[in-house]
Image 1: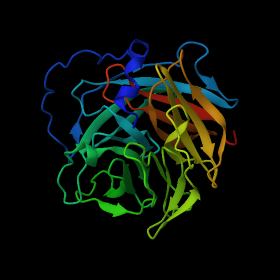
Image 2: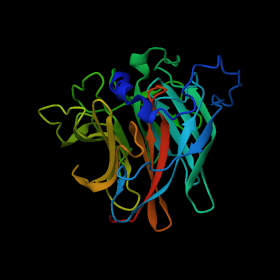
Image 3: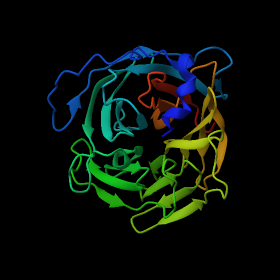
Image 4: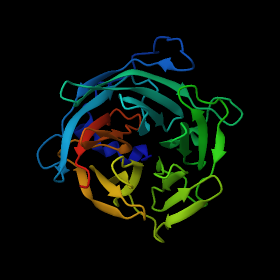
Amino acid sequence: MMSLRRFVAIGALLAVSACAGGSRGPLPYVPAIDGWVPALSATRAVGLGLPGGAMLADGVRFAGGVELVVDPASPLHSLSDLKLTDADGGFVSVSDAGDLARGRIRLDRNGRLSGLASLSYRRLTLEDGSPIQEKADGDAEGLALLPDGRLLVSFERRHRIWSYGRLPAIEARPTPVRHPDFAFTENDGMEGISARHDGNGWRVTGENGGVWDCVTAACTVVQAPPAQPLSDRDYRITAMDRDPSGDGWFVVQRSFAPPIDARARVRRMAADGALGPVLVELKLPGTTDNFEGLAALTRGDRTRLYILSDDNNNPAQRTLMLAFDVTPGR
């Protein structure tokens, strides 16, 4: 998560959201279905913005973008990761306020991202089964879907990784699983988490650096965190998912330099934690925001990437989903 105060100055440059007004009052009551509460939402199309902003490597093409528009009181703000639940556009997300969300990606007839549908949410729970109430308990930052169907959620502030069982009927009493034995600072925790390619365990990245491979018994250091913590101006990993076309991962990196220079990059990560060339870079005057979510799947002969931004529940920011198609091996 990026602190709200770090983005206040972006203001007018990013304040395009239709939900940028005052609250319209309480949302109408909608009954839950199997624990999931349907959410009112709309989307509008977005592009890559003005020339000179987005830069795409050879073999990468933009495949559409949308802004999620919801009421200021909606739980569908501050979405901080993204994973696909099936090959037909189902997805799950998590908020740093302690809510789990799900929905479906809509594509147009040309296969480009055109909307989001069937959104719903449910509150995450503590180990005793009670709903999360405190921000320190609910600051969820990462999601991993394991081959056995288990959903892992990583949290910061009170740093931990919990398994919530299998979707859609998640377990009311989450089970702690192994996480890196490292003293993460309060607001710079385990932002990136993904299943490993061998089907055994999960890979974790720290926002301040460091890569670990974890199994039930222990976590192994792949790359140690730097001796000098990274600054906001540095590119820091905020999301990760497996590369379905190879043995590595894709990652999102974020950088912010006051007052308004917010940037994001997409790169590959190798098994040893090394990062490859920049595939996508987003910056002003193009479309940009606080990107913290990433999901990857194979579509035809390319890899489709979806990246998701966290609006920090700030009317000067937006919840954006952008799609990119990457030629395997790029």
